[in-house]
Amino acid sequence: MIKSTTIPEFNRAMIDGAGLLSSPLARGPGALPRQRQLIQRLKQAILAGQLPAGGKLPASRVLADELAISRNTVLIAYEQLTAEGYVIADRQGTRVAPLSAAAASAAKQAAAPE
Image 1 (spheres, rainbow, N blue to C red):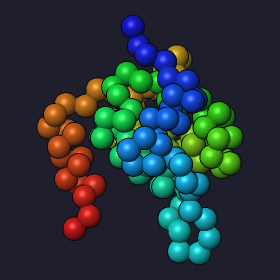
Image 2: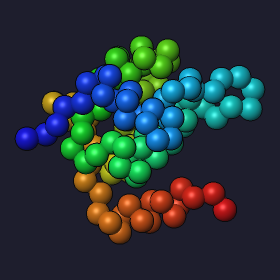
Image 3: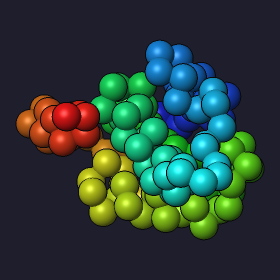
């Protein structure tokens, strides 16, 4: 059975450790686009194990409300993460995809700053 994550559990998972959602997404001149910031934060949480494989992500409307951003921003982020294989989207929602050790290692290396 797939574990469903509620918003408080999701927020706790995102806040514990790296503080990924404890601060709002950056805005203004020089800031990365919010969808890119959200993608990076979710990737970091998935690769760090804060969002475990099979864990259900919040609905796009709910996450958009929590972060005070457009729902389209969340949809684009979820679509990008789906295309990259980090999440699986279906009728039951968006879940974290199981990552192989090799894929996780390659993703960590690609995401590491030089």
